[in-house]
Length: 366
Image 1: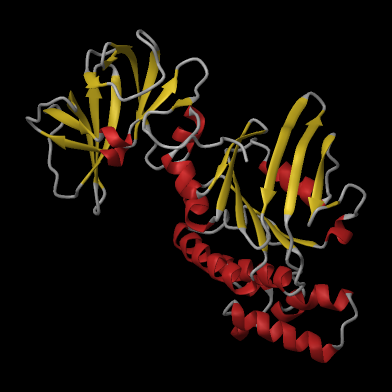
Image 2 (image 1 turned 180 degrees about the vertical axis):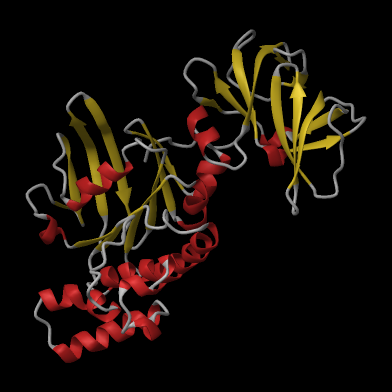
């Protein structure tokens, strides 16, 4: 097992700044996810950890020892890629065994370790097949098996589930979580899928334009986003944002709505954005009250287990997650009740979140 630390990592490719002062601390044995959109710097971060890219500045360390001069082999990490990179002419057993054969381990020991890993991954019945005879999910398990059999100090995974269909991705998320618990080693996992990050990670680092936006547990990142980007990137459906200003003891929307102003550092007349997740809203036809915003149903999406309602409030479309029994017609006037204990406020210019409740501040970068 291994603790992996990045301290002030920067990396450029020509005029493109891929990473800028990236610092993260991955605890020994944790499942750590690098989450962000394409081009955020996730894969570059992984390659710097593996030693495949040399940083322009900063330091990578394993268990407190600097790894700047260590070759990729000396770092003893295993990588699992988006493409499975299996040897097509070798059987499943031979693919899994390839790292052990390179170490000249005895055949009997290789056979035992391959059998153990195949049983762990539920592919022991596939050992005599070739990659071309396997499904995508089975090929992914073989690639994982080839990495696991090495028993490296850390596993680096670069969007390994991207090529799978939705059902298999959900199944493999559960399998990876189970494998992590079983082997107890450090996993560093790259994804642009917030559902993967939220369901698997012990801790998440959100990246954007090569910079760390926030590091925390899935619950911290979801419930206490430190800025507008994190708030809107994490969550499905995305957080609603409504422009408003502070006037006396109220938040007054650009579209004329009014809500009680929570305790905040924003002064009179400050321009803000009110953030509220769709699940923290509810809809009733004739609802009125201090926590209600009026609007008109713009679209209805029944999804079986829930109904998504798009409600037009002035020039803004607000999405609401409602119970499957909720029924409203397009064009109907409705009231949206806001759970004021779950709102977020963001500074318009900086995008930073403002504290709105009597809770401890959360450090955006760990």
